[in-house]
Length: 448
Image (tube, rainbow, N blue to C red; front, side, top):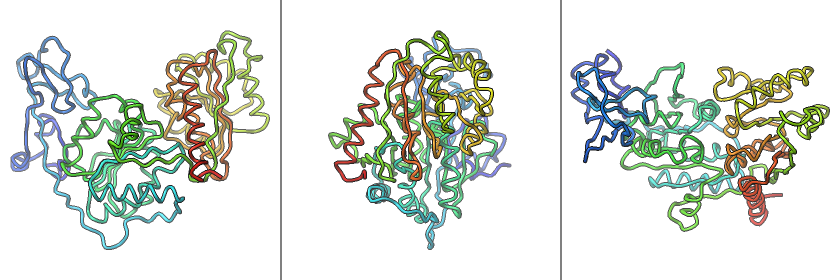
């Protein structure tokens, strides 16, 4: 039989795990129907989504059952199913030695935010950290996390993006090497285990119930967490009745900004990066036509790329769609055949390796979709955005993309260029948001 600790704080489909556990273990678990039926509406209790199916479908139970399409990627949950959970006992011992082994130094604004985070974790409060890209949000979490772990609390740090989780997990393991930890995401090569510290994608939170004393949601403005009611419900469900929740973002939406403005949620605002240099402000350049429409070699974008390559500068080239990327790659392979470059997108099975090659400066440049708009750090790069007026580039996306530049104290400068045929509202607002944060940082004496 399987280790029953794997059920602690989890909420799973009984049908899927029944054969793995003894009757005694199953009896200790609480059960509830997978769906609630009210006024003819079927609501999934795993993700709180109302089924839009017009009728039930033939089911293994012999009846016609409704199922949930919203959370189907975690396994189909049917109206005849039961959800099973085993209470989280917090079997982690309190520590008499510091859990945190990180020996870095925080800036004054990071220290202030770090203490505020610790206070919110200690008081089981909600707090949002609005910090510009490259402000060092992860390092600000360390002190509060360390104190919570020393008290035996269980912590989950979740992000909507796998790439972000892949980058955060080794950093947290290095900071808390003696604390049991796990990286969990769909398709992960490592099986789930019961640990005190969990780094996971927000989708995986749907499989937890009252499991964590501290929940940290990174990149709350990112797809798919942003405006996804099911994932917001999952984050609420995964926390204990008494717990703290820390939200992290560089680009809060208008609703969250209003809550911050009117004091409806505790907040810490960090307008400057830890190295005290201003955020690179994007430059807008007009494109006469698409790269596929105008003379390729004579286009402003290609001339810009040639200049950067001649100066031996590394750069990211953002394109809005996979289809445009696939059309450009043959042209780039022919024209830039003496350069080392790769292309990466969400469906690329080798994206992790390509990002690593870029980080290790094995490439001259990397062509990418918005998959790399956030959560990845390259020490010394410029950024160019092609068709910045495309609908995929929201204000938040453009701010995040610009935030890839100048993150290192050794290389705080860099150029960001938005190429577009029209001057869109997201472009204007992104540049304004970056400019306003620099202004606030200067006013507070945080930018040199």
